[in-house]
Length: 127
Image (cartoon, rainbow, N blue to C red; front, side):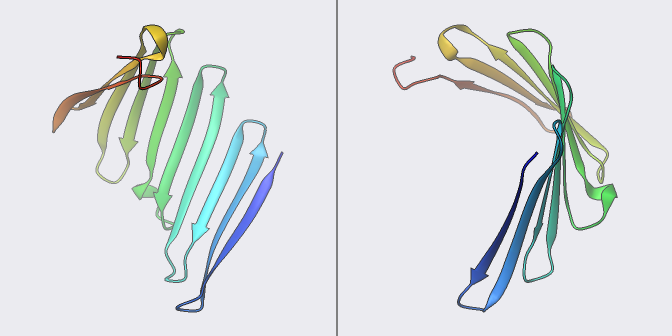
């Protein structure tokens, strides 16, 4: 288990921003950020099993405004990532497909707004 504590001293306005991160367990990491303006952010990463992880992110202490993303590796080539915005009750989905030579295609579905895809390669010479 590890931890870090990272204060940043802002010289111009003489304020301090703080970031702290800790491994709660072998499967869970918690990261908290607080800035001089009183804004805060929380991120929790938790591995549920060998193929499934969960990421929770939010600003402030309002748990109803959190975003929850699950990542599930279906097999060696396919991963799905549903994301839930608790404030708006909005769901999006990404499907990542590994293709040959380190290339991936990601399909992003936002049912209310758009469908798009990203194609990425492992190096500049891939394509």
